[in-house]
Structure formats: C-alpha cells, structure tokens
Length: 243
Length: 263
Image 1 (cartoon, chains in turn blue, green):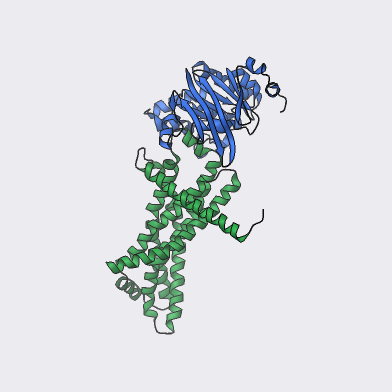
Image 2: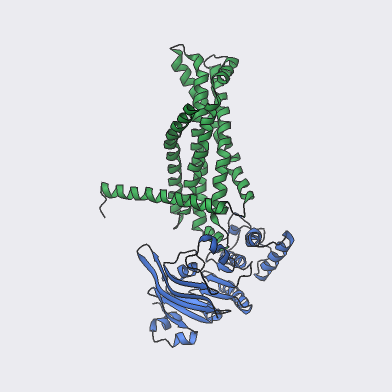
C-alpha cells in the first residue's frame, strides 16, 4: 500500500512552471531517492509534501488522505506524523540543543520533564551528540547541526521522514553516520524520501529512485532499472558525469 | 527596461495594494488562530519584557526632553504677551493628547518595529519559520501574536510613563528657566487638564501598537532570499509604521474630537 502518493502534481512560481504532471508513490517502509540536476525543484517537491509550498494542481495523498487544499490548521495535524530534516538543520538559534529537541515533545505530547529529559538524552546518544545539550546551534559544526536537525525531526517518531540533502557538505565520516541513521530508521519501518546529489548515499539507503528533469519525473524504478534506462543522461548522472 | 513616471507609479501602487492585502490576511490569520489553544503565555511575557522594559529608558529620555523643549518654546513665545501662566496647560495638554503617545510610538517603531522585522526576516532566511511549521506548530501563534499582544499591552503603559515624565520635564524648565513656581505649575496642570485629554492620547496608543507590530511582522514574513532582504524589510517596516502613526494620528485626533463633542 502506498503511504505517499503524488499524482499529476503541478507547481508554479509566478509565471514560471517548476513542476507539471509529477507522479510517484512510496510504499510503507520504503525509501525513495528523489534525484536530478540542480534547480529541477526537488526541494520544492519535498516541501510541498508537508505544505510548506502550496500545490497548483494535482493530488498528494498521505495514508490515503488527500492533502492538497488543506488549510494551515489542517496541515498542523499532518506535520505531526511527518518529520522533515532541513538541509541546514533549521535549528532555533535562540534555543539550546536540548530546547530544540524538547520543542516537539512540549508541543505535542503530555510527557513530564523527566520523561522529556530521558528521551532527549537517549536521542542525543543515538545520534552521537553526547554533551551537546547545553550548546547553542552557533556553537556546533555543520555536521552536528544537521544531526541535531535530524534528531529533532524524529523526536515524535514520525511514520514518514523527508530528508532534504542530509549529507550535503559533510565529510565522509559524518556522511556515513547520517547513512547509518537513515538505515536504522528504515529498519524500524519508517517511510522516507531522500533528496540528494550524493549518489553513494542514495545507493546505500534508497530502495528506488525518481529522476526529475524538465519539470517532470522522466524515469523511476530501482537502481538496476535506472541503469537500464534508454535515457543516457540518467546513466551519466548516476555515474557522476556532469549533464 | 525604461522606467517612466507611469510605470514607477504603477509599481508603487501595486506594492501598496500588496501591503494592504497582506496586512488584511495577517490580521485574519491572527484572529482565526488566536482564540484556539495552545496559548503561549511565556512567549508573551518575554515579548512584554523586550518591548516594554527594555524600551523604557529610550521612551523616558525622549518624553523628558520633549516636555522640556515644549515648555521652553511655549514660555519664550508667550512671555512677550504675558502668557507664561498658560504654559503648564499648553504643555500638559499637548503631551497628553499628542506628544506622549506619538513620540513613544515613533520610538517604539524605530526600536521594536525594526527588531521585529529583522528577527522574523532572519528566521525566514535560516528556515526557522519553516521549521516551526514543519514541526506542527504555527508561526502566527508563536511569533506574530505574542509580538502584537505585547505591543498592545505595553504601549499604553509606556505612553502613561512618557506623559508623566514629559510633564515633569516641563515643570522643571518652568521652574528653573521661566520662573514659574512648582506649586503653581502643578496646580495649573491638575486644574486645567481633564480626563478626556488623557483618554484621547491613551485611546490612540492601541491603534499605534497595531501600526507598529502588524506591518513589522508582515515585512519580516515577506523575506525570502538572503540577508539583503532582511535589511530592506527592516527599513520598510520602520517607514510604514512611522507613516501610519503620523498620518493615522491626524485622523484619530479628529475621531476623538468628534467623540468628545458627542459626549
């Protein structure tokens, strides 16, 4: 059963069309790699899935619920079930790491202070971020900020996680850590979409891929299927040849 | 592209319409979301401290100086006609009706309006506003409403302090520069000022609070691409707030005069 299903999705910015007729689906526990050249609208598509961008047509269903046309208040309910890992972490710079992680728990759960503290300590431990809870985002490295952002997106244990270039700009050590985290979540049955240019990470964690070009998805399938694609640019992209 | 006076006017008119439309939508969102749980009392308290307590020295210095200058100018001008005894009445009524609320609001527009627009703008650039939404919470509730409410609560209080300090400044100049007795000055203020003088100024502060907070939040939320836009949003917020206060003051004064006559 498809957890996320996008059909004939359209998105414009003013007179500029970003997407027309984009369709794909992701089944429960699957990780879809959304790939394509820079400026093809991968992040816009990802943002549209949680209503950070408004759709200009088509259909988006999450757990069989149509979400296009939702009001901001209706979106709030959907966003509790969908984690979003921002490219730069998007941490609240006036809050410490602890406060950043406590934010979703304080907003959406009835946990007491001790339970919140225990949960955050565990989460920081899982993400290799021990001893950072009293630090502010400005005191963390880029890799640590991304991991805190990821940890925050997962505090409510969402059914779906959307990753926006989680490994961009990271060293191989931190990239591997993020890959392991994504795989660990996948093993727990979390459905996810990964937007990335980092093909080794995409190959390591994704079950299937959708290739965005010219405002639509021109090819989708498993890595083997993409490699067999008649479109040479897809093979070139996969193999790291500039297109 | 060639810029002609008509195209410049068209751009300007479009921008003003966009601003007005945006303000209406923002107020609608605040009214729609503001009456539902959760309420962020802690964030409101933080904003009251930042907007109110932190602005107090600036407001009091401005009010004191204004009262002193007004007393001096009225005193020197009226002295030629033997009108010095009217200085307390004139200073008090001008401060209570106009200068107290208007100067306090202008100071707040510069200090707080700029702060609100740049803070929200920076949060837009660093995707923190998106993060608030993505985490299932509302930036209108967490960011916009506490700032608007803080201005609505704090501005009347600051204006009351400004009225007091402005009159004390006038009294000091009356005593030391114009040789008006303290006791006489005080009695003239009490005898000649009435509650409507105070209420006319006090009533305006609620409108001025909205003129500061709403455009500042609006321009902050319009920032999309980079830090340069933060500067532009800040400038627009201060200009819009200041103009709304100054132009709005005329119409509000007129309205309060009509209400006074009616009462």
